[in-house]
Length: 139
Image 1 (cartoon, rainbow, N blue to C red):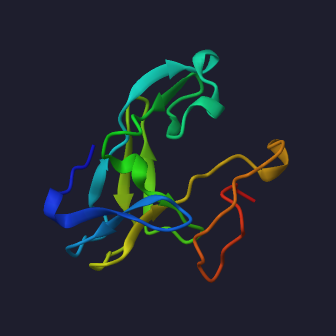
Image 2: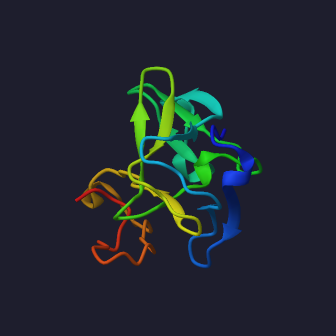
């Protein structure tokens, strides 16, 4: 779910990353972009292979976003993100880290666990930032 007005962003195809969210209007640092929303499930019921959009809310609960809906789950990963996640016990908000100009893609760091915890890893990063690590995992 987005908190910013609909005329502040658009969803576009990005090539290797699939859909992404792009600013149409200037977005100020500190602006709440939106809340990650979806079905809340206990971990034991979540198979990450079954879900395209999954975020862990607490040590016991994950949120699975509906891939057919428009929401902040469409923000792509970047090794140099312009947004961040603010996680509470009840919700996860995406917030602008800096001023974002029209035309810029809104991005976050996915903060995947260290790469050595992933077997048959396919979490390749396509952000193309100067400091790209080549993976969506934390180092």
